[in-house]
Structure formats: structure tokens, C-alpha cells
Length: 169
Image 1 (spheres, one colour):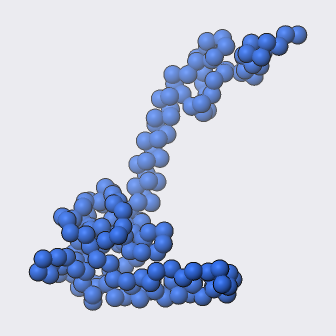
Image 2 (cartoon, rainbow, N blue to C red; image 1 turned 135 degrees about the horizontal axis):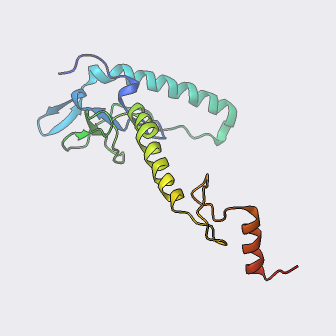
Image 3 (tube, one colour; image 1 turned 30 degrees about the horizontal axis):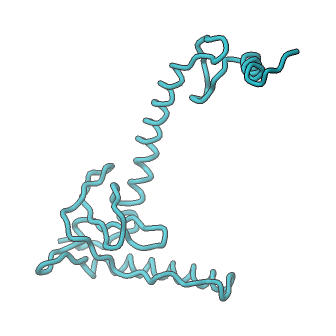
């Protein structure tokens, strides 16, 4: 059983500030359901509540009567299922009740996975697409910086536009 408190780097928060994921070792089975361990979660929940209160006080002063306070942050309750494995760090975690599914155990893992894997894969795919490009007017192979380029030069682009519009000089 876990003894050290859960930190902000180990969880994901929703856009409304709710805790969305729970590390697998911060949960225990009680009879027929799963429950988070209060001693482990109390410091993080208290810190998040303080931040929410400070933010709410500022918004109340700024927006006045138009401000509707957010739901209070409470200790998360896991959905009943087996732990999910994080795509990035391979640690087990649970998804909190009333939260949508996710593939990453924390915001830190999501940011680092997107920065490394997703962007690299996307740029490689675009590079392959750029290698297949040919000019729409003269048919020459393009050495384009963008994967959406259609013409090899301004001359070809203007010629194609004149063909479509029927302009002649």
C-alpha cells in the first residue's frame, strides 16, 4: 500500500479542475468497490482547493454577479475496472468517476508523449506526402516546404489561375 502523498505530476486534471486519473497504488478495494486512500490524497486535494479558491476570489472580484463558482474539488473515486496502462510511462492508473477515458496517467506524460511521438510521426508523414508532389501545371516534381503546395513556381500558379478564369493577355 502506498504511503507517500499523490503529487500534481501524477494525475490529470479536466478543464474544469476535477481530478481525472488516479495512480493504481493510491486506490484500495473496500468490500465490493474501489476507494481512494484518504491519507494519500488529502494534501493534493487541499492544495487544489486553495488554488481554486484563490482563482474564484479573483473572478468574483473581476466579474461580479456574472461569475458562477465551479464545483468544489473532492477526493476522486475510481471507476470499477482494471487499471489502464499509460501509453507513455507504462504505469497503471484508474479513471475517476464522471470523467472521460484517457490514455495517459498524468498531464506530464501526455505533454511529453505528444512532444516526442506525435509531432515526430506527423512530420514524417508530411515529409512522405511532400515527396510525392508534382506541379499542377507543368508536371515537374516539387521540392515543397508544405505538403499542401500545388505549383512549382509563381509562373505556374498564375498560368493555372488564368486557365481556370479564362484570362488572356
